[in-house]
Length: 339
Image 1 (tube, helix red, strand yellow):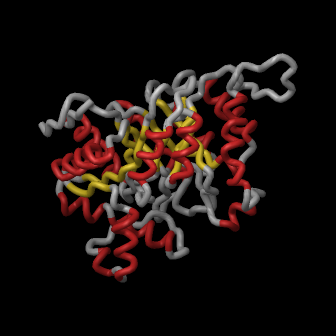
Image 2 (tube, helix red, strand yellow):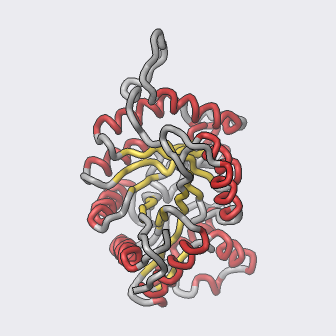
């Protein structure tokens, strides 16, 4: 056993509900539920899905609907949004949606909120989103949280269901803005280090330094995104990870696609700027056999002091992806960390 100290931090799952080449959204949703059921058995803390739009390789656009699908097929794991892109919606509608989910699955629903569009500008316009609506994100968060409070005398606009329900709200981010907002509101903070790690350490430090206790949370709580591409050997894991590498290169090149099969030696085919892109966006990652993954997870947790890790993995083969999360769970159980 790799022994670092005296506590084990929770691991959770971020599922982008990948649509693989040659498949469809229906199969993606079956895979999502199967992975969630495995994650529940392996002791993962929560299972989150993310809002994206007009993305051929991601099936979770109607995020609240997919959360209901997963929650109905599981019994103990927390299920939620990582996240809902709030400027795409009215706060009242999101309060009603998550009030409905919390009423159906009490004590199991999380609501993570982000301010990005989860799409390109064309899709944002199709959702009737204003290009400046992100500027109102702090006010929208406060309004949304207000709908979960008990209704006051004479209150005309109410979230039914929603009012009086304790739906935990998280702030998601990849910059200092989200860190400051989460700290000011006394909310848990989830940083997107699995694809945007540049400001991670600065954001963590800022959030912890400025945190103001709230009725939801009395001290800072940081969850960090982390990619795990695990297999029985380092070589196999490196090949399996190329599906995600292709997805990032295609997305940043303006060619989003369904998740493609792995390509052995893929990075050898890339231009220098593409290799640099992958080295940056996937720097918070563990790719390899169980021992390799365990060591990289331990180093990341020790460096960041994370309170929780949100593990994500995009692999073309569903069985290989499930096995990767199994290896991640085994690595979690073998780590003992400092309080």
